[in-house]
Length: 113
Length: 113
Image (tube, helix red, strand yellow):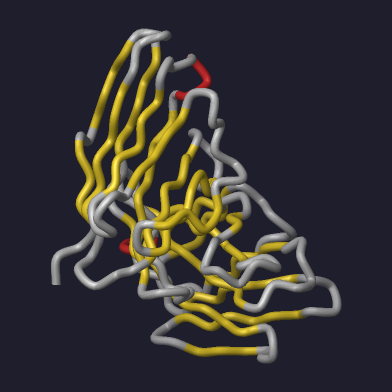
């Protein structure tokens, strides 16, 4: 079974630039999550989708971050404009609907300079 | 085996010994508690979970103990192997029960040959 796919693996941008990350969840998984993991910390949920609807985006900085999952499968997370403190690993995860066990991708390491 | 007090960032154990990693959680309403393993450059990997109505659950070489009185969770790894070297995170579902995970601070397990 293929796992959660994310791209790119690494991205370096200058502050105030924009960036987008892509995620393809495990086939059949209705729930998709984007987490932000700052170096040395545990992942923090940014947004959770159930199919193509948003379940929780309470910790998403909506002035600069946006995410979509238009057809209920792939998802993109965008940051515009980026700040230095956005440097982190962005992890996508998926699970069966409302299931506890989430499967994570390898993440995208973003460096903002 | 060695045990760690309530969240030490690093635990070093000898290969073959037992390891105990501890975690304090915050929300008494959490229904599930989960342990994840994260190797360098990879996303978190599910190890084992336990529901709030249980005190103990065993898997292959791993045991999770839940003490709701003091809101404490522990992960025991039997006969620790070099491949167990990683950062271990505990996570809780919080009061939402949507599958959203709230991660604690990680503990780095170093296995000495």
